Length: 157
View 1 (cartoon, one colour):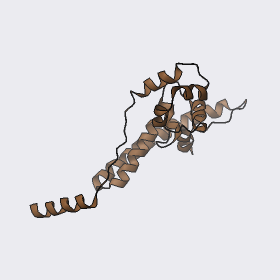
View 2 (spheres, rainbow, N blue to C red):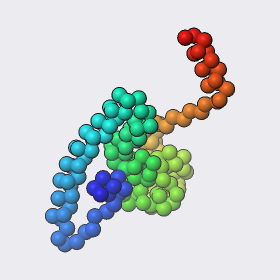
View 3 (cartoon, rainbow, N blue to C red):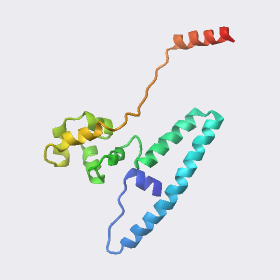
């Protein structure tokens, strides 16, 4: 529950007696995070050893989410951007902007309107995003190319 609450951006309730609970939550989160990082790295290493690409891919996605902290395919990944907190993420998601890529492509004035910020906030935010690494890779295989490659490999053996 701690992992999901952090990666999902859940807010803890605020009451007059909640400060003790918030401190305890932070301690528990720190302990869980240390164990979680070691566990996920172990899973990735084991997947590499077993040549299990699916498990390795999922482990790396989880590791990226933990590092963000926010699910890699969810709006909370935008918390990595300086000046964007949970409230801003919720406003952007409500406007249909749910990824860093979408935020980079939208008009600066829509960012300013959505977040109720004065210009040139949107432009500066997008300038910041130019420095973010683009980590998406896509591949497509054509059946004919794969079969030709396989035939070449068989002839070379």
